[in-house]
Length: 103
Image (cartoon, rainbow, N blue to C red; front, top):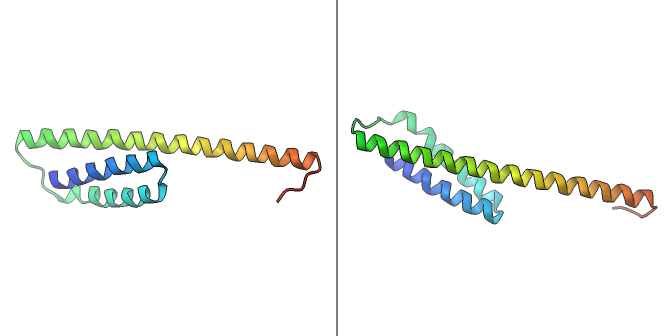
């Protein structure tokens, strides 16, 4: 279980880096890989050692935090794209109103 979570953590870090760089396609691919890893977790046995369980809990919280940060980055990008679309639509309307040709 720790092995899966550690791999998912590494993927999560890489996904965040890619999102910050704007490489959305590669980030999406890695998100799918991470999802496949995390989908394997229910099939693994939870360790009985309390130290192992603490590690699992900490890593799980770290992944959850990174996922939230990634969602925030994605929502911010969405808002920026919507604003660009609105600005483009306004520009097109103004050009039409003043008789400029639009493509």
